[in-house]
Length: 294
Image 1 (cartoon, helix red, strand yellow):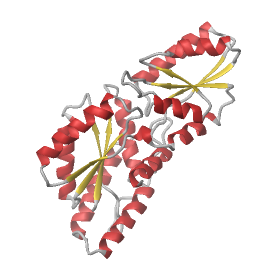
Image 2 (cartoon, one colour):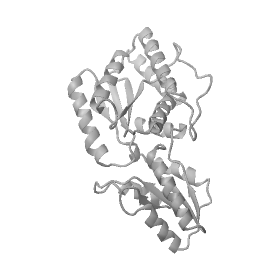
Image 3 (cartoon, rainbow, N blue to C red):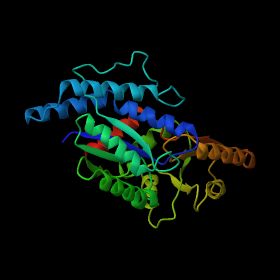
Image 4 (cartoon, rainbow, N blue to C red):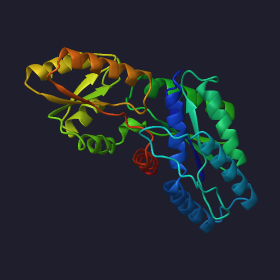
């Protein structure tokens, strides 16, 4: 069954996360997406499940142009090539869209329904919904499933909706974080996540922190970044890396930078290294594909 993919993020009034989300969708439609789609198409053709060639090329061209138009170059992201190749009759690019849970002009269930209608018109029978959330909080466990169910009822049986596990459940995230840390000379690392009041939501963060030999702090719940830094300073650490466990730069990462600046003034003898969030990179896109395929 041919699948289209809808990436769901939290949503923000800051435009940067939306720009990064569009870039990530563009990366997913890149070389890795082509290979995956070609393989899937070949298997379907072997089973006799072909689609209209004219419809396929038309839909691919529209989606590639849409993704490219929303993928400006930004710092700390993989730049878009100047000679971005548009689909040809031999291309098999997957249909990938983006949606936001909050702060969007339309509720998520309506965004899902509209994308599903577009997918159906392009010959897709299934939409896989990929929550780009790092923690299993209320949004992942309650809000998104409710929105998907509402969209499913509106669509009836036209398109099959499959809700995938949230991004934070993928074991490969620790590897991406470790790659960042390998570029520093920090003696100790603080993995700073948003935090959630949902019981048990901190367990995945603690597990990742253990894998990368870090301690945890949270933006919205205890222990705070300030408290954790004071603990490490009292313990004698002098080079401290702070690794924000967030997808994209935005208002919260700006606020984190301000707090780190204040901590630097409070502890001038300490060397702080504030890392970047995960960002819209090819490595993250590859990890998302791996999550979809497993």
